[in-house]
Each structure stands twice: as C-alpha cells, then as structure tokens.
Length: 64
Length: 393
Image (cartoon, rainbow over all chains, first blue to last red; front, side, top):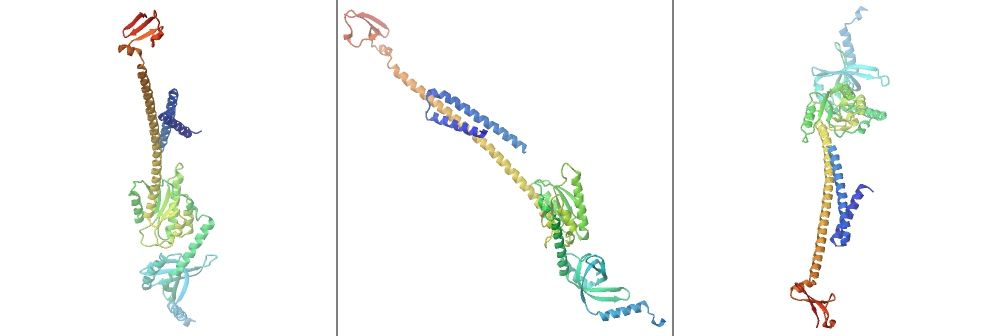
C-alpha cells in the first residue's frame, strides 16, 4: 500500500470515529479507546502532511 | 604585288563594309557573361559559350551596350530578375554586329530579355535543390531544434548594415528584459562574394564552438541582411553555401528579407523569417514561451502547496469536532450522574429527620405497622440529633 493510500485510509477512519462520537454511538467504555485511536490517526495524517510539505519545498527550491 | 598592299585601316574598313553588308540585321543570341562592367554610362561585356560537357569555351566575343540603351535596359533587367547583370549569368540579348577599324569586333546590344535569365536561374535552383535532396542534406537543419534558452546568438551580417542594427536593438529592448549575447561574424551579403564570405563566417562560428568543449559557444546562428539598396539574392542560391548551411550543427535562422520566391538558403535553414527584426522577434518569443512554461509549472507546484494547506485544515476541523464531541459526551454524562445523585438524595432518611420526622426501627428494620410489635419489644427511634430506645407497653 502506498503512502497516499495510507493517508486517505487514516483520514477516512478518523472521520468515522468523529461522526460516531457526534452521534453518541459509542458507550462510555469504548470512548477512551476510540479517542486514543483518533489521536493516533491525527498524528499519522499530520506527520504525512509535514513530510510531504517539506519534500515539496525542497523540490521547489531546487527549481529556483 | 606592291599594288595590292593596304594599310591596316583600309583593310579593316573592308571588313567593316563586308560585315555591315552581309549582316545588316539584329539577332537574338544566348550567351554567358564572362565579364561585365560599366564605364562612362556604357556597359562592356564579354560573352562566352562553353561546351556543355567539357566546360571549355567554344566561342567568345565582346559586346557593348551604349549608354542610351543601357539606361533603359539596366533598371528593367534588375527589376525583373532581382539582380544586376553580372559574371556567370546566362543572358538572351538582341544584338547587331559591328566592326570598328580601331576597336575591333563587337556585338552591340539593343535589348535584353530578362525572363530568359530568370528561367536559367530557376533551372539552376531546381538543379541545386535536386542535388541537395539527393545528398540527403536538404532537411538536415529542420531536424535541429532552437534550444529552450537560446541566448547566445552568432550573427552573420554585413558589419554596418541597418538590418543588423535593427536586430540588436530589437533584442536589447525586449519587453521581458531577457538578456541576449550577440556575437557578430561579419560577411559580405551582396554580390558574388556572398558564398565564400558566409561559408568563412560559418567556419569561424564552428571553430568557436569546437574550442569550448564543456559548453557550446552559441545556441544558434542568425543570417540576416537588410537595408541594402538592391534585392540581389543571387549569391544565396549556390550549392556550396546551401550544403554548408544544411549541414551546420547549430540551428540557423535566416532573415534575408525579400518578397520573391524563397532562396535556397531559406529552404535549407532551420527557420526562415522575412526580416532581421522578425528574426529578433522569433528569438524573444522563443524565450517568452520558455518563461511561460516555467511560470506555469511554478504555479502548479504552489497549487500542490494549497492541497497540503487544505488537508491540514481538514485534519484540524476533524480534531476540533472530536474534542467538541468528547466534551459534550462528558458533560452529558456528568449531568446525568448529578441528576441521579439528586434523585438519590431525595431518598436520604437524614433529610426526613432534619425536617422533624422520626423513624422507628425494630431489629434493624423500619417499623411500618404497629402489628409488627408486641409489649416488651425494644424499639429504637431515630431523630435528627440521635436515637431514643423505648420499650413497647
């Protein structure tokens, strides 16, 4: 699976958790686990974005 | 025999009479010019006929065109053929014979048919084109490409020509501020020297390029002329020049300004334009296109940057929704708990005692019915501040 697919998948999973949370679909017992997963997904997405941005900036500076 | 002696003049006069008597008419003659010069308004020519196979002269004669005729014939010839009479041209002339006792034999020219010369030039052009194609060099220049960053330009032009000035000015004053590095290789751009002169300039450019092994000295070559008085392009239609241009390793742009048919030089060059100014415009446009491509690419790269920003924004929104949802869930749960707590508080017996009620217990249970008790049972009454032990009577 490539990096991009990982990002898209993480994002989709994150959106599902948020939606379920907003709709009160989790029991209190599940909450902690889901919140933890959500925070991990956010980190994965953020890291990927930061990495991509750094790569882009480097490519851009090469071209100048 | 001494009676039969003549002076040279007498004898020549006899030749003159004989010719005038025997050849009184005018004749159309085809010949090649092996010499041609103007003096005192008259035109003096040497006519020649060569054997087609061996190329050796088989006939030769001088010819003259007197001033009055020449004044009419010369401009007409130049206008129709685009060049002056010069050595090497094939001509069709109307002549009559003249023998002058002092100056010898001459054909006197009374008319020249320029269309014959055009036909002959065209035949020669076609022959050169055929030969270039046969050699496989005719299209070679068009396989080259003007480089993206064509800025180092080798120019072949007459040094002081107005066309060269126009070219340089146009390049310098381009609206985009592009920098061009122009090197002039002077050449004669008119008359019979054109071929030799341009080939020498091309060789010069080539050796410049060969010297710098790391990088080519020039990106392309521009051959321009303009501002000259005549439109004499005959020198540009030679096989040797066409071969040199066609096989030159750098792309060549021609701007040798003329309205009639393309010269062979134009046909074999990489790109032809009409004027030196147009050649400059072409080079500027070439760079402008490159600039446009770069700007476009830059823009597209920064659009990718926007994608990242959008994605980050989306993540932030999700995170925010997450924490809002969490907070709400927690608040709801806490609220629910405190409601339950309140509800439970209503059941607290201490609350009743405080309001003056009391609870009677027997064996640890609340007494709800006097029937539960009999005389002598010990009961415990709880009140706000303590308990009372009593015996039932």
